[in-house]
Image 1 (cartoon, rainbow, N blue to C red):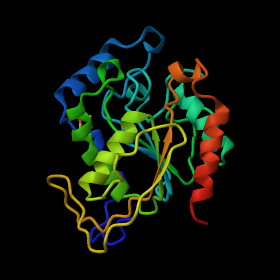
Image 2 (image 1 turned 90 degrees about the horizontal axis):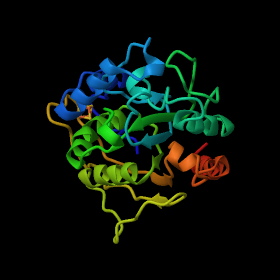
Image 3 (image 1 turned 90 degrees about the vertical axis):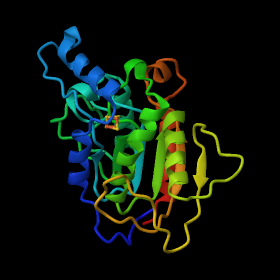
Image 4 (image 1 turned 120 degrees about the vertical axis):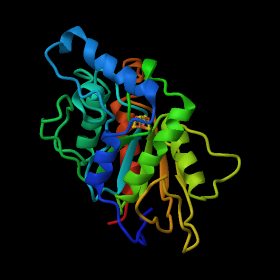
Length: 259
Ligand code: SF4
C-alpha cells in the first residue's frame, strides 16, 4: 500500500495537526463543541478535547485499524481515538485484543496520558468528529476521507487495513475507488473475518490528492482489507463479538504481514 514514489512525503505529525484544525463539517463541529460544553456528569471535571481526533499509533505500522468515529464522551473528551469510553468499553475491548496479539503494551485505553504504545498498528476513524447518535451523514464520511488519504500517505509501510464494521469497510472501499483501484464485482460486502486481497495498480498511477494538498501521491498498492465487527458495547455485551473472535482475526492478520 506504500505510496513509495511520493515526491514530498507527508509528515504524519503535520497530517494529524491538519485533522485537528479541520472545520469542514459545521454540523459535527457544533455538536462536538456542544457536548464538550455540557459534558456528562461523570466527566464534569474534565476539559473535553471537542476537536477532530486524528489517528494514533506506530508511524511504521503495517496494520491500519479503521473505526467509525469518535465517541461523544470518549475520544471527543480525551482527544485520542478509542480512548475514554468507560471501563470495558470499545477502547478497552480493542486494545486488550491488540495486547494479546502483541501489538499493544497495555490492555486498557481510558486516558490519553496512560502510556499506551502500539507496535505495528495505527488506529484511525473514517470520520474524525463525533456525530450525533453515532451516525455521520454520507457526505460527512465522504468529506473526511481526504484526511484518511493523507494519513495513509504518511504511513508508508501499511499492508493490511482492518475495517471495524460496515461503515469503515465501505469508507475504505470508497477511498480505493477514488484511487482508481478496480474492485471485484459484485462489490465485496462486510462480514466479520472477511479478507479481501487487492491487486496492485499499474506503476505510475498518480493517485488523487485532497484539494490544496501540497504533496504528490504515488502509485497505490491497496493491500489487504479485513473485516472485523465493531467493538461497541452493543456488540460485546450481547456476545455478537467475543475476545476469541477478535483473537482469531488478529491471528489471521499477523500471518499476512510480511516479516
Ligand atoms: S468530520 Fe472530518 S472533514 Fe468533517 S469537520 Fe471533522 S475532521 Fe473535518
